[in-house]
Amino acid sequence: MMHLLLQNTTPWFSEHTGILLGSFGGAGLGALGAILGVTAGILLPQGRGRTWLLGTVLSVTTLGVLCFLTGLLALWQDQPYAVWFPLLLLGGLAGGVFGGLYPTFKCRLREAEQRRLEADALRRS
Image (cartoon, rainbow, N blue to C red; front, side, top):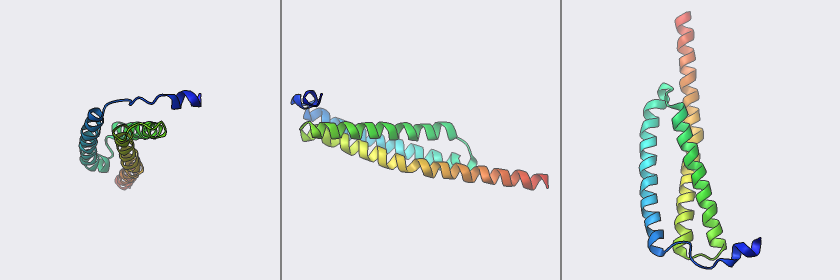
């Protein structure tokens, strides 16, 4: 099995494709981060958007980790720089940044839920 993984020495994709993957992938990741950040800043303090915000962050984190692992495999197989570098960079950024946002989003949702419970208790008294 290990021999089969090391056997492939042809590049997975061209240098041009690697450049496009890195540039468009990075721009898309940045835009998605900005959209999620603004949306979370508006919705999470109100206790709204739990399912799709946390789901999106978890999905992007998972894809980032998979992309990072694919980049490690490419590096291990001696793929060219233009193949492994964009995969490692995008995967590391997506996994790290979005993975770090998940606990923060959960904390903001807990705070909003606590405020809601306190407001309900205050209304009843």
